[in-house]
Amino acid sequence: MSADTSNLLLVDDDMKTLLNYSVSEADTKIYQENYEMQLASDEVDLQTKFHYAWCLAHSQHRTDVKKAAVLLEEIFKEGTEEIKRDSLFYLAVAETRQKNYCTAKKYIQAFLRVEPTNIQAQQLNLYIDKHLKKDGLTGMALFGAATLFGGATAIVLGTVAVGAALGFALVNKKNT
Image (tube, rainbow, N blue to C red):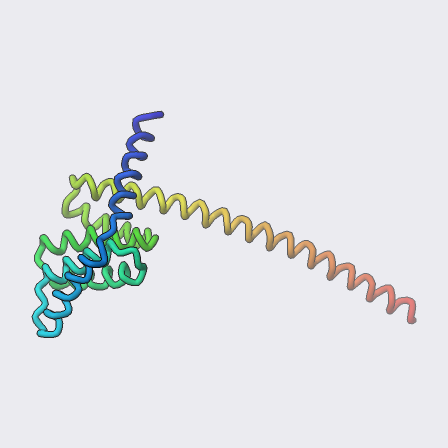
């Protein structure tokens, strides 16, 4: 096995650990209650909002991960440089967990422009690239199969149409 292959396997293992990390529902509930209490008083601290979004980004429920992405985008628009950077990273995580690799790629590239030496971000970038290529190849295969199937269908329909036209012509010729 080459060094590149073993490094890619390590990246996959590291990213699977990160992407499959799950926050307990009890912990999530604590952060949710803090967030909702602050929300009710119209004074939401960005750290509280971030911690709640972080929990949601690591939820096993798809709707929670979507909600995390919305909150993280809000935090990015409102926050300091440090919290914006963290929001970008967890936006990439949330989008990757939802298999929205193109969107995740956009976020992780923005993060890497700010912090190009971050190893975890570089690994996530490689992981996203791998899945974009895989999805691209799958998409091309599906397109090729559809084209092949469509072409075969056109040939069959064309043959049936020609046969029907010939049959119609023969019946009309006998009648005249």
